[in-house]
Length: 372
Ligand SMILES: O=C(O)CCC(=O)c1ccccc1C(=O)O
Ligand SMILES: [Mg+2]
Image 1 (tube, rainbow, N blue to C red):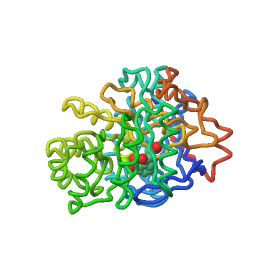
Image 2 (spheres, helix red, strand yellow):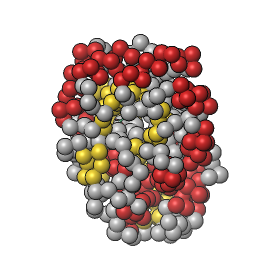
Image 3 (cartoon, helix red, strand yellow):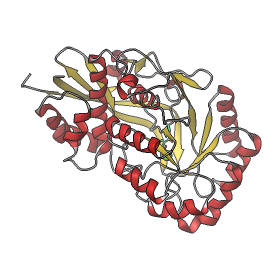
Image 4 (cartoon, rainbow, N blue to C red):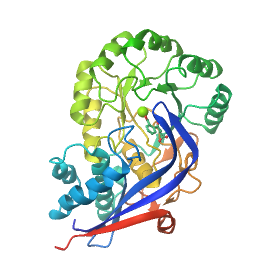
């Protein structure tokens, strides 16, 4: 596979509804799209999940632009590659910066699958033809507003409801939702809002038959999570704390979690995602695919990875219309009875809508491989 050029585009999209978590509110998204073009004339696409402020992890849209332009793209274009697994290998000498690495690597995976005339799902070893869909519900202005929203999602067919929590918006909120919906698959995501001083408070959640509680403690912790898990019946799921397959191994060994949320961008790409998947499968740790309010390209990659066998829990992979007035792919992602069908066309299986992307583009830059 000869990569002839890489095009970076920064686009800006308004979210249909602001999204609030314990770490802040997002109203719109600046997104870096990566297009990898081969000498055969095909294009593979990736999308960075980095946001403007380093509040979820240490990366930002700007640090991603810099890392891609000045470090990662030059490394990628230096020598040709036979298989996308080589991309993360080549990037290992660059520390961290996983969102930036993943966006480029995902574009190469899409390109590779297209060159093999294979769906990305198949190229990754996916087995499922459709995936179960959950939805992540942000912190709201009022309890009434939250209950109304949950009611709508349940009636739309979502298979699992995730409620964002923080101190002051937690036990009583989950009690309300659980009372009104005794049978739904329900979970909570704290985005690191608690410490071990809150153990007793968090134990109150054990009453509500939650499928799991996601990332209650600090973003880089796996030690205290193990202490907390020993005191909670509710399974802990790690999100922010898992950057690599090595992190996952240590967390499993320590008993820091019973479930793992995989985000392709958080772990540096699809090759690392496959490694984490294999490890979790071996240790009977169920997984699901997390979301970062992706536009269509990132969403398509999430859908492809979720087709692997050990993604046994519904993910945060809601359809396009949940986030956007108009997405950047065709067709848009749709859900039927709580499922998304895995597309079987080549690569990600959705076409980037170039007209729409051009309209949203703030700036772009092309990097050419002069050797090919
Ligand atoms: O994309 C989605 O719908 C999931 C949204 C979500 O929960 C989230 C969105 C932004 C940052 C962090 C998270 C999270 O899973 O912690
Ligand atoms: Mg999370």
